[in-house]
Length: 329
Ligand code: PBG
Image (tube, rainbow, N blue to C red; front, side, top):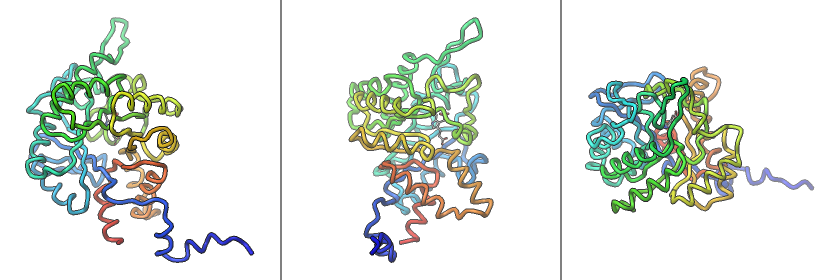
């Protein structure tokens, strides 16, 4: 007689009983965009996403919490005239991010507020670090001077009440530097979710469109990782762990599930995967064609990211997925 694996797929209850992976709203982090205006406006490059005013976002969080989304990650759209070569706006205590954190925490102290740490939304050159130009026309993204600014930015967001800081810049040594800057100011309870393996990916286009933050000159390949490399991701993970990161992240997610899987084998830290703007847009566009079912494609995608070994997923689909999961149970 044949061995019959199909017995374990006989009906929905049995399938649930033997399921190896689960997906729930508590595993999802919603990236959100805020700007200085009083209007909440749709983001053309990210259909279904909104550029929020501060009060608009506070109101939206009430809805998110009802859906079981307890974690959000803040990204700012900074007016062009506030962007400078040294990105001073990044650590302005009256800047959009600190004010958003304060407004959110006043009403929802239990909400987990993540804030992205990097200079690109504030830097007139659209790079994650400070750009040094040379007379022969070449330029360099300076590592150590950037790390100093990142520490100031981290302190500014932590003072406003951020729970988790997420350095997305890929400068060397920034986790150790930010950790010791926080600890020196008695902010040892603020967590660091490091963008550990952030690849120089074509998938960030719609995000840069939303923030108008595309680099003016060159690309990000001298700091973001080369998509050809896996061992290097493990090297970065080892460093971030030693430097004191609380959570390691892989980004993008679906094209890099091998990286998530490999990282899962080599660390005991929680792993996050960022399902980025291009991955979101590909699903939206495919669903709009009418030839794939959006709900099943999205839930299958997010489940696959969990199956590869990610404990949590940053996704623009977080609220929508949470709603589908609620309706399905
Ligand atoms: C920048 C940053 C980027 C994203 C998150 N933080 C873009 C980039 O590195 O150029 C991308 C997120 C997305 O595409 O959804 N520090």
